[in-house]
Image (cartoon, rainbow, N blue to C red):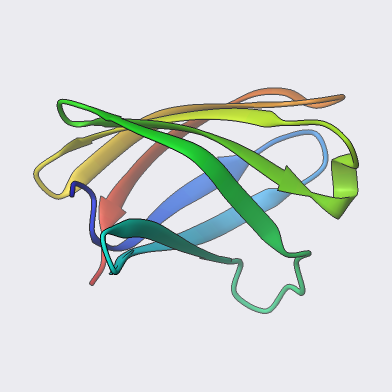
Length: 102
């Protein structure tokens, strides 16, 4: 499994600007994801269809903010850094450049 740990990345969109955190853990051989934005209540985010390819994870995410839409996510891990892309409906492409914090 790749990317295990807690990661932090700035988020800069027309709807939100701040820091996002993602914790990736091993749940009996399956990836488990927890998302948070410090001091902000966010809706539950469900991640599915996770595919590991080298040092890149691709997946689909769903949340109540964009009901019925699957959000494509791709994140590449290089040591203690990550880069990625999230294609959020109605907002557009959100680029990620983050680091491991735990």
